[in-house]
Length: 288
Image (cartoon, rainbow, N blue to C red; front, side, top):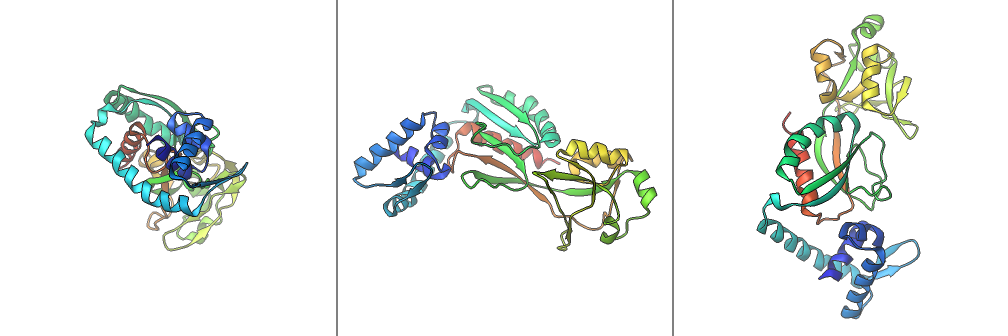
């Protein structure tokens, strides 16, 4: 059984190192466990090189049969034990300002409901390297580029275009998308690439940036100060809109939502402590 689990985790995560981290083993132990399984089956399941792993034909066939069986066993075990039984340590990455909103119920509810789970939490808009920085899970707004990671979309976040009243007064009424092109923006830039603004009707453009920033908190402050308009997650600035610090631009034109994803290396069968955390974050984002 141990060899089967190690094999599936290795295929799902793309390396013995990532599989070992998930299973609490050393990479050598994970590799030996798969080797013993291959010896037992009398066939090679994985092609190994110094940089890559790939499935043999026999390995692919075995993986296709084995994975649903192991998933069923894992689900059966979860049904048999209460969610409150979840225990262990999780290193978690949360995105900047949105992460601060998530932390309040994590502290007041999740940690009380699961006293046997301990957390190490980092809040940053930087796209951390989940594997190299040893995160168990990262909640990430937007895309996921590492193909060795498992990614589950847990929410679709509403976006909004905002500016300070004095910026609107200076540039005049914003009545259509072309008017936006005349505005200076405090842009969100990651890796030197500014994020585009996308509308549901298919219109897309990259705003002119007077100021480029890498966090939602900084963009919000820049927008309130009147330096430039901002393209932000609505829940981060709704109170500013309600209290008049910011004005919503083109409120009748719907913007594309952006996904919030839970990204991890635990394959299709994450440990119970990770499952309950992902489910909790998903639930609190649906509250409002």
